[in-house]
Length: 256
Image (cartoon, rainbow, N blue to C red; front, top):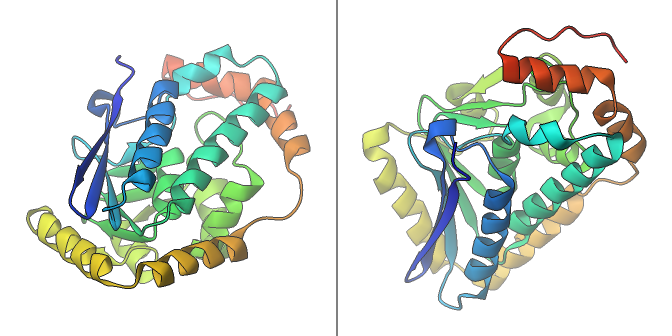
């Protein structure tokens, strides 16, 4: 499979960032993470841009991080470094100065769920699915900061259901929970996204910027998570989960 791409296009007041690795439902590779950071820097530096829209190519948003990259992990410290890297990207997305809109079709899983959560608005098609199925797949864990974001948007109960029970939140449920602002048919998606982008571009930019920053401060987690990250990512179960995922078989969990 390819390394994929993250494209950034600026037209007037609107920037469009597109995840493109459609053969893998836009699962993120390390080069894609680097490209996303570069795209966010580009957007933040563009004086004319008032709104940024994030969308996946090929009918999906982002289906997490490419699991094959975990083959190189040899200890819990690798997991800590990975989670910090992911957090730095999500924090950068959350912190760009203008409003962001996640346009979610198909899967928004793992890192994709976090990207959508870091955006200010989410518009979804009826087939959108939000999940963090790590308890069923590779047996890793989310960081404290990632869980804090999910709890702030979805509440403790839904967050535990997503992560601990490996459930999926469909578009209608996400709308009812207030996580998704609109659920629209694919044919009407461009019209709804452009209408929201136009409205946001007309509003006071300093008000929008201050609100983004202050809400992020409210959500910020306090405490340390490195002990648990090292324990989980350094475990036999995590290695078994990665191998089972790659071999397309159910994992055999041992709890160690």
